Amino acid sequence: MSVIQLPTYDILVDELPVILNRFISGLEPSQTFILVDENTVVSCLPRLTEVLDIEFHVISIKSGEQHKSIETCLEVWTQLSERGCDRHSLMINLGGGVVTDLGGFVASTYMRGISFINVPTTLLAQVDASIGGKTGVDLHRLKNHIGLFGDPALVWIETRFLESLDNRQRRSGYAEVIKHALVGSEPLWRYIIERPMELTAELVSRAIMVKKQIVEEDPHEQGIRKILNFGHTVGHALESFYMEDDHPLLHGEAVAHGMLAESWLSHRTGRIAEEIYDEVAELVRRLYPVRSIIKSDYSTLLMYMSKDKKNIKGNLSFSLLTGIGHCEPAVVLTDQEAEAALAIL
Ligand SMILES: NC(=O)c1ccc[n+]([C@@H]2O[C@H](COP(=O)([O-])OP(=O)(O)OC[C@H]3O[C@@H](n4cnc5c(N)ncnc54)[C@H](O)[C@@H]3O)[C@@H](O)[C@H]2O)c1
Image (cartoon, rainbow, N blue to C red; front, side, top):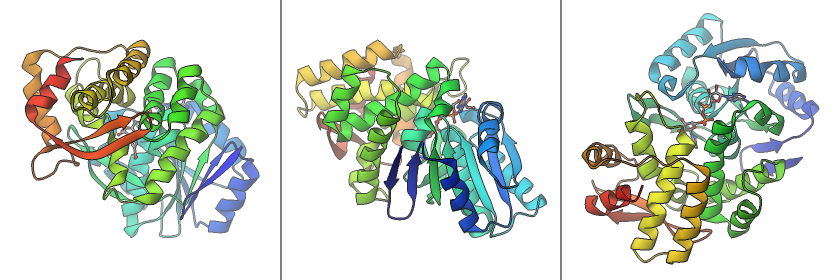
């Protein structure tokens, strides 16, 4: 059990349900809406229902990244409006990163903003998506192109939700744990090397602590917070590229590919020693089936990278490792360097 405090909200890991009920009654919501997707309505809503001692309405959306769209937001805004949601209503986002990103965005924009609580149910959402205040949706295939910063009132984490996740989803979430270790915590990296894929409350709390420290320093990503995008320049391009494929890549899987490519760039540009690159590559290749990219797809991937929000005056910008637990934000590289990194996949 742990309480992790950010300046404007707390993250509670495996705390007693009475605390959640007390927090909600303190908000005195006029109505409560729980946003779920087609899986969390089955796997997670019964547990939350058992815990909550308030009345609520349920709004369900389709699951998957392809539904993290403005069309889905429109459906949720419409349901909120039809059911009389007002400015004093509360929204609880019960799901993975798609539900917490989209639900946070819907809540932050409905009537100029209503309170929301994130109850993340995937590893990825528990250690990353549900905290830090980034909310939003994709624009066609462009990742998180529409959105805003909006903090939840509370993040309520129960690690028991991870029990119903399949192995592929666990591994996907684990990629963000690996990322947190690589950019901000050498001790967490050692923990991962010693106990790979051991999903414990301690692991979740330690991974959250890395993100907490970074977002506290730079809540709106003006500088240092960009290091949390390590692996995401290439990762987001691959996620977009495969989004409508018969076999899309999960977010964490795409980030794992991105970390491989961007660790190689970190080494290639003299920021990390070859042994460090080898150690990262060994772990990533052991945990994730890496798809190789054919040369004719490079130009499409570069087009997606050119739309990355971190880019500076039209130049590709990367966050690159300078050691285990250390990362440099905003390194400008050429298209040729980015292509060379795709070739190592
Ligand atoms: N806001 C941020 O800072 C941030 C950070 C990282 C990632 N993200 C976003 O998070 C998203 C990915 O999140 P995700 O990996 O959680 O994906 P997701 O929300 O699509 O969840 C993955 C799948 O697991 C199902 N699921 C959720 N909880 C479950 C449970 N307990 N048991 C069984 N099934 C369950 C979902 O229905 C879905 O099918 C991406 O859109 C990414 O851009 C946001």
